[in-house]
Length: 355
Length: 76
Image (cartoon, rainbow over all chains, first blue to last red; front, side):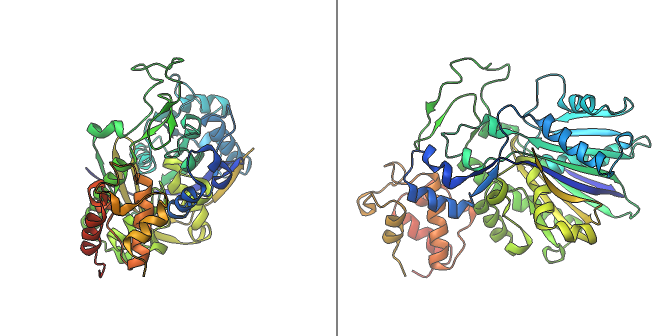
């Protein structure tokens, strides 16, 4: 499914990461694997440092912390927020919407839209698409898009398939109209028939959490996981990404009549370094144009990996230049999405620590 | 250049890879070992095995891995 937008831009990018840093080497003893095998995996996948919340910290805590930082720094005024979109898979509650909780905690005006969007790693592109659509309305001048998750709280510490790669974060983008009338191209696909490849089986109404769903089970490969925990069918997800994403990106570029060589950066979701580098190889994109270093510094923080690489790798460039970038997110749903846009001359582009 | 059995032995030293015709069914390689192996093969042979080829059937035994290496451009 294809979309075009005109005259919209991201004007600021802030990423909030927990100050609590974990090290893969320190955590290796939690897994039932020989140290040498874990160290080889560290090298291939890029596992090293990651940031996760301490017990009890929720998505709204990270988001409120980040927005207060922006308000106090004068980077946006509270009364300028016409819409607050929150993309998350880990809401504070079933109800109310966490975006409403954030609005209430910050005392934002009533004349605004609050909306939670349940999307996973494609959520940055999907959130931007929603923001651009809202900006077609006269009454909406600035949209705050928050991509936040605390999935570490739903990962088994005894599951080597998941735990060493998970990071938590909240990314806050300000999205508004642009004086430049440049075209933004986006492409999106979804396949719910493969939804169970990335899931938290228990805790919803289909299978409520009980003492039984909290019991750790041996799920093979020496991993222990409960039904309350995040499950990922790693092989299915890996092959989904390698099969679908290059086609999506190449189709988007062909449609926009843009060659790979003219794109300054491909900012793709980063599940792990190996997967991103295989994508780059497949599309013959130099590694320097498709960064893959978020996981080793922050972990896979879901739909926030793209804004994290924007702030971590391209902070200065995106403050001063406008670059042609291709964003691509893919994951739970399954959903895969890509967007080609001019990005830059941001008014802020930082990473701060949640304390 | 290291041979394929030597590379496999580095990843899982506890197994004799010449004695199995199905490494995955025999529990000698798991999905993460496959990725570690691909990274080692890419480096050793100066190739990049395509992501879509990283599927269990290509890693069953020495013969299937050698077929994959040839397909990926390794000079064996």
